[in-house]
Image 1 (cartoon, rainbow, N blue to C red):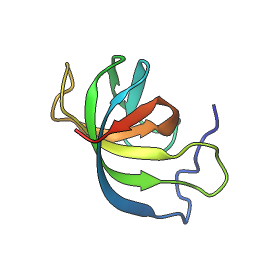
Image 2: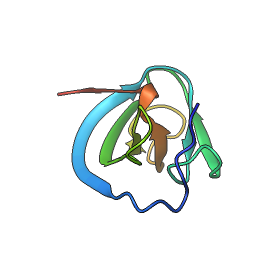
Image 3: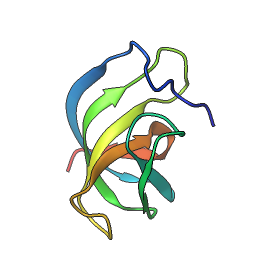
Length: 89
């Protein structure tokens, strides 16, 4: 899995998208696999994303999310875009 640079110049594109995780994924403190783990989200955990971040090079983006179901409900952090599936409702 590619690692997004911790201090890259890329910006966060503000938006709102509800979705869920497509696999078990680590919720991170920043858009990097080397950032602090805040928790583990099970497959199917519902989240709402308010930011899409992309470094311009990786195939997938990072999503800043607020967890809306499961053990980490209310927690905010980042997940790798390969594990996010968005939907309208």
